[in-house]
Length: 111
Ligand code: 2BA
Image (cartoon, rainbow, N blue to C red; front, side, top):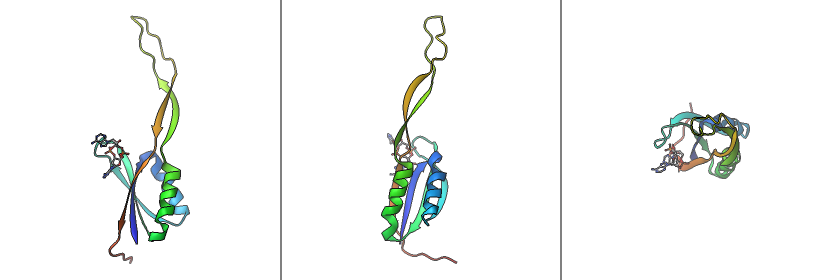
């Protein structure tokens, strides 16, 4: 048996948990914080048979893989004393991604 630890963005945590549950994986979702950015993220603990590890990682990649989104909410700067107002400028931001560790489970019991 293996344990997969998958650290994903908080936004992706619920969606990927649902997808994994639909494929009959047991998942525990922990609310965690990245040590560098000190921002909330989600860590999924997934215990599964070795043969199912690759499928789980594929599902996580399909649901949480890095993707780009165009957003339009950066205001333009002031020009001299005249405010240029808020001009919607499209900006591409990167979302998602996952950091995954797979470890052996020495002993597994369920009561
Ligand atoms: P990622 O490398 O994609 O890491 C995303 C989150 O995954 C991390 O959040 C952390 O919670 C977890 N993580 C990544 N590698 C890990 C590991 N080896 N062991 C345990 N947990 C791990 P943050 O720590 O807040 O980092 C957010 C992003 O900041 C990272 O994205 C990376 O792009 C950057 N980063 C992290 N540490 C850095 C450093 N020392 N110098 C420069 N950039 C760093």
